[in-house]
Length: 208
Length: 119
Image (tube, rainbow over all chains, first blue to last red; front, side, top):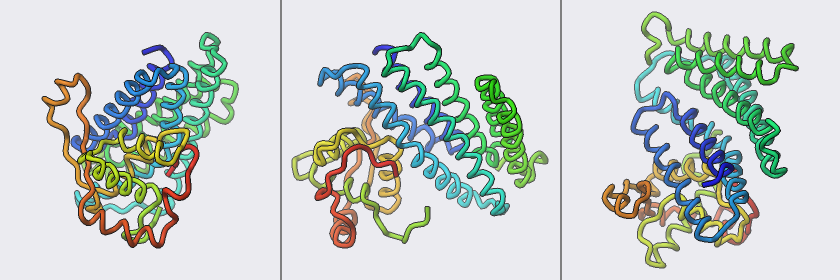
């Protein structure tokens, strides 16, 4: 496996690990194992067809990027049904849901921008310029913010921590936009915090 | 996204159709990547279905009872030196759902798509 394919596989696995955070173990491990199997089959098929490694990595990244909206909606739906199965009586307000959606859109923007930077570096075969690294950092930070927002009700500490880590990383990586990234980052952390508070956290009810 | 109960998306119809076609060709069970490749070849698409699109659709079809699945025997996967596959098959309800759904939805095979289905 060359560096580009390894990067694409790693990014896919990282994204799957992030959006399955907070799900029941069986569901989480099932989705991760299924994607692992898919990645393995994809690589073996590409080798069998003697496909260029650059083409394989681009295919893997494209499959990752175009699937992100479905992953997010699947996560929201699955999280919702899981919560209802656990009979959580705390309802989320429409305003909070809207804020979370806005936050997830911002996170998706980071993910897409980062993947665009990586793909561009791969196409230009310019992995040494730091653009690919910037892209990977943006993807991971965006994924952390998005998954943190989504998990902040189920697992408040983890959710808020992920959002904060992602926001700090973005502020550092996009340092020329501090006037924007700092207030947006604070807003993201606040959304995660108040979302967690709606479950009664930190007085024990937040373990739901 | 709110959908009418029982309403199937194009990707879901395509998966059911491809699963039935594979069975007619002697492949009793299919796994994610196999069905993605089957759809790509059948539709002469340039790219495979995106991960999120594919596995969300498989999950929903299973929740609707139109597909069933089980994890492959670990020994089989170990002997083949690869990760375990999650094996799916189309249920009788899945076959039954395909006909009326296909009558009211765009034909998945008659409209070749280029590229991936994002949702």
